[in-house]
Image (cartoon, rainbow, N blue to C red; front, side):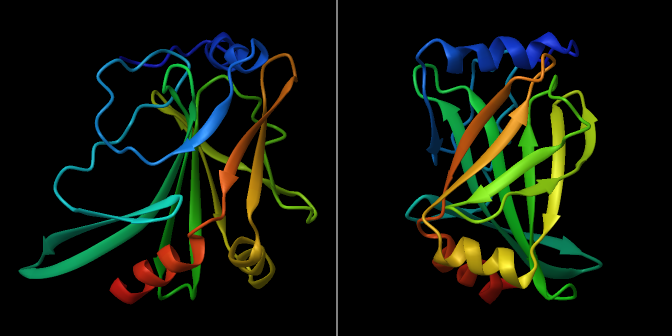
Length: 192
């Protein structure tokens, strides 16, 4: 099902947070047959291999280009509404050797306020703002190239929070677990 393009789409989904529902990280990567408005759609990962590292899942897939076979890996974590399983945020981390650092992509529903972007905080470290790169019919995406300090925070941390704001400028905190981050990152770096 397509996500509503109205600024109220995310408000409806995030209103669940204000009604006693809680959100949590989820690593079940099966297809979601009942995608609802105000959430981001699950990307199906059927062709590759899944490997679990605590709260992170590594997904690797082989593909061909110009007659050569390549292997691409990424690590993922989803944040869902516990009662319904609706995906509110997906965090995907990849490693590109030419950049020398991992890159994170945050997928969030349509209807968030774009100007403040996302705010990421790991444990009690200073929060970092991440600009929204693009929004499409499936939601909005923000990307972050890790620097040494943020990579250290993710490796040494236990909990993170991504704060988004709705059309009324109300903030919503979405949790990210750092448990298993280092092992999953080492795994995807091995394959790069």
